[in-house]
Amino acid sequence: MSLGITQKKSSCIMSACLALLLGSTAVPAFAQDPTLSTEAFDSSKQLYFERCAGCHGVLRKGATGKNLEPHWKKTAKDGTATEGGTLKLGQERLEKIISFGTEGGMNNFSDIMSEQEIKEMATYIMMDPPKPPEMSLAQMRETRKVYVEEADYPTEPLHGRNWENFFVVIERDVGKVAIIDGDTKEIVAHIPTGYAVHVIKASEHHNINEPEQPGRFWYTMGRDGKMTKIDLWQTPDKMLVSEVTVAYDARDVAVSGDGKYVIGGGYWPPHFVIADAVTMEPLKVVSTRGVNIDGDYVEESRVAAIYTTPNETSWLVAVKELGQMWQVDYSDLDNLRIEKINTAKFLHDGFFDPTGRYFQIAANASNKMVVVDSKERKLEALIDTAPLPHPGPGANWNDPKCGPVAGTTHLGEGTVTVWGNDPEGHPDKAWKTCYEVETDGAGLFIRTHPKSKYFWVDQTKHPEPEIQQSVQVISKETGEIVKTLQITEEEGNVAVHIEFNKDGNEVWVSKWNRATSKEPNGEIVIFDADTLEEKARVKGLYAPTGKFNVYNRTNHVT
Image 1: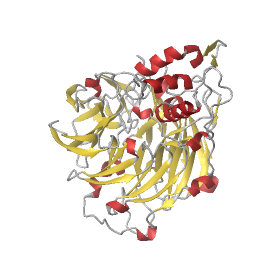
Image 2: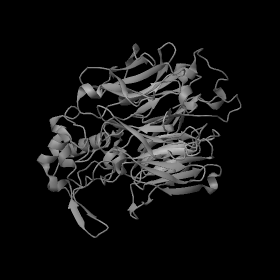
Image 3: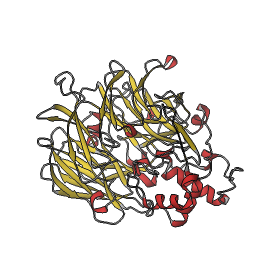
């Protein structure tokens, strides 16, 4: 939730951290007025982690969402001081904000939390936040489990399917990933992973003594910090080969270009962990606490996006609260080389340009797209956008006027911003806005394919069900909306996330039910990418959100 400013909705939902995360469950001694029973305090603490902390932070100091400390004070550069806090807002106003949301973009929680939960949450955020514990390398190693030894990895696929057209699908609320055959539309497996997986990344190579197969191995990161390794060549019952927990709350994962290492980034503790990509044994922990671009020390400086640089021996690590991109060279772990590149706050997610040199990432609260040159390891450009850019995995295509371009949707309003991203061939257009498209509602994701005439956007952030349950298709040639596709009209369901199949002739959209359910409650709706007619629906899924086509993601097809 967010008090008075635009922020992410379901993409901000945090992991269900266990009691270990916050240690003792007793109500703090400071809590006199307001107060909660021990049971209500524990329940609200858990719910805050699941629904609120992703945007507001574990310590409630704010990021994309506002500061939720009971008391806070900010001093501007001119010396002017501003004070506020949840205690100043009070119980009644807090309950209304949580229930009904804000015009700035926070969604209502009246259909997610009960009246009692909303009441207790309002009280809870007027109390000082409890501080979670740290996590050591030794603790991480104790969580590692190996289900299939490397010696037992098959030398060829065991299922006879076209695995390069598999879709790896997040089943958010049940802590699973579904594997769907893109050719037959059959669900191959439901694989247990971490809670509410946020990101899944494929290996491009792997250092085993077998022929290298890009996209064979996939790594997931749950919001509970559990990182799992999946082998798509296995039979469905053995696709989960190993796992390890590297944080109490986390968001992203990436594999080194040589296939030797996997990196996982933590929200809490704020750090990243480098592990052996074959065995999943944690090897190195690096804290991301530090001084932000404003010169202030930040304890809760969380790791958002992590991406492998296609042309360099490094990862790009977005340190959200610091407003810095860290380029981490993995060629020598003992003497880790890290360039800390000042950019803008608060960094979230992004994507590379077609050359693999320039990384384009949203700085949500700064209303900017940040461009980093991974070859020179420096800031290339800052692009002004509409409120709260959120491209997700993004989209690149060719525009008749501006040449190669990229685009983003926004959490704050129904706008698509399109900018040039070819400094070599079109230097006069590079890193400048080419045009904007007004859509019906704010959204989370934009996606296209080189073979497609269109780019697609969802509108998940709009408060009206009819709009948030639809996606819009926009012409690359004219920049005009050519069609609005209604994915569902069922109450409590929204349309989210777009992905093309390997051949680029199908578009897959998730019908996501926001209500947690132990029964299948979601679908994937499949459209013909050219005619825009519905072709099929994949049922039997649990709250499907993000989905990732093996071939497209492995080959950087955007």
